[in-house]
Length: 561
Image (cartoon, rainbow, N blue to C red):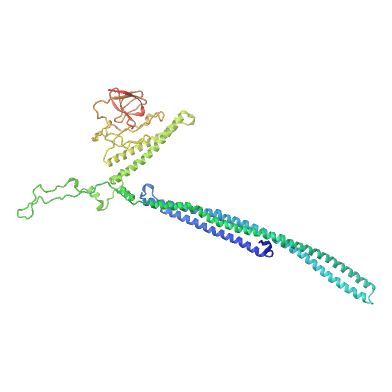
């Protein structure tokens, strides 16, 4: 069923219908636009909500409770969910709304063209009809004039009083009128035939084709609407799997809440490390009072039954301050060594600071190594740069390393104090990449532990290996902490081998040994991993030297000095 045959006379109605179709398409496009604006607003509000409730503090200050971590995970999933709503809005705007608006413009242009073609065909047919009608009217007028001439001629021809000239004139007029009527008749017949032909073409060829084009256009519009309806739904369907993952993530976060873990974190966060206070003894202040025999009270023998105050249980200000369970916790100013904190909390804070400083030191070490390598490249290839230009930066890096090592050493000393024991020389030793001071230890250079604070010394730090970083600058070599002059063993240690000094070492700190380049020394204690080797000169003087500063040759059989 086509519009061209069924609706051949409904041009105006088809004009209105096609206009309504385009208006409906644009109305749906407007609906999609408002829908995507709702999605955009919804996504924006969700993101603002997530931003509002996201932690604004640093990660170190954030609580580590599973309930908090789960909530932050839910916020992250909600943020991803908001992103999917933005994807929906974006695809609706591009695949549906934008496509509809472009198609609407195309429909308007096509409709305008088809209607113009229809109007032109109608105008041409009207013009043909007008020509036919004019020829018809002319033919009618000519016929009437011929009839009048016929009547006038017949009247004069029958009148005996009419002259011959009058009769001839009437006859001539009749001939002219009759001839004009015949010509008008022929013209009218031709125009009528032409109009009938054009009218047939109009209603059987031109109009059906134009209406068929309009029908095809309207059907394509309907199909496009159906496709955009589907696209509208597909946009939602494509994000459903990701949204489902977001929701699954929320459920997983909810299942991750662990009340026992949170309780353990509370203990870990607030444990002071103090022991609960013991029982307070009874202090009898009446023992010096004299009692008579008539008293009904039983006398307490002197020095018997009297409980003397135990110094361990004496109530001092410090003890009172620890009774936070029964009173307000005293406020103390924040100190650099965190001594205002309970032991357990102080230990954690110091350990965290040491870890942070160690990371910073590692960065400085990496920077120093990179600068040394660059300097070595410049020395081998002077055209690439001046090696001396790197010296200020290297010196600055070494200065920063010294400062960081000093800070680490200071904090590790405080940490050892908190832990209630002194680390041995191998305790908390840094890796070979991070060269920093170890904390104070009460271990003799031979490794034996002593409780005598006077025997306390600091372990020598790890020295840079000249064989790994090319030729080092001895002035930039890291100097060790002080060693004790005295060694625990009275008998000389056996010689394990000998070594040759590759570089000079000033040995200014206590426990170190002065050596010059090419000096030959006896090895009496191998490097234990801290970068120092214990050696003895031929004169009998002993001390520690940097392992990286000497070339060692160990012997199979040890010998005395």
